[in-house]
Length: 217
Image (cartoon, rainbow, N blue to C red; front, top):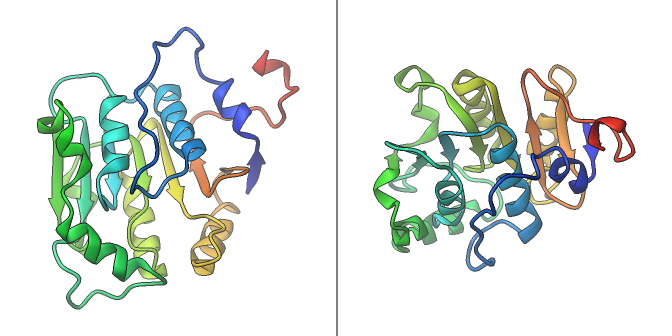
């Protein structure tokens, strides 16, 4: 796992880009820093669409939606239609139940019709039924069987110059997820952003190893 500072992500993005949309944390699962890192990664790969494993309450869905410009479906987001016969890790069952009754935050957006909500158990999800995506966020069921399957499908979905990001890396509630991503990093270059629970994969490109690297200046 390649550990980098948040500033290394921010400084890799074109500074001439327009300001981005941001919402202060409410009931969503991301910290402010994590949200801004996701937006920076969106801008870095110039994402025209995104796929999300785990809609939850739709806050991250809206973050992705508002920061992607284009026509047609901008964000495809997958979540459970029910918790029946689904195995969970940690607090995931409680959170999944909450998400079934709350209104999705992305529905408040004027661009809500550009979200495709897919309701199914992600263990049954197959990338063969979908195209390629510039940005993929894996933050669904954290049980290792789900994390492994979602990740396998994410690699099939990601565009050649896209990005895959995972949440809850090094979250003490999900040690098996962290071990899985650490093992994956032995085969693929994964970056962990310090001070966050985010790690990501950038096929076809790399970030400087240190803030003092001339490539950042």
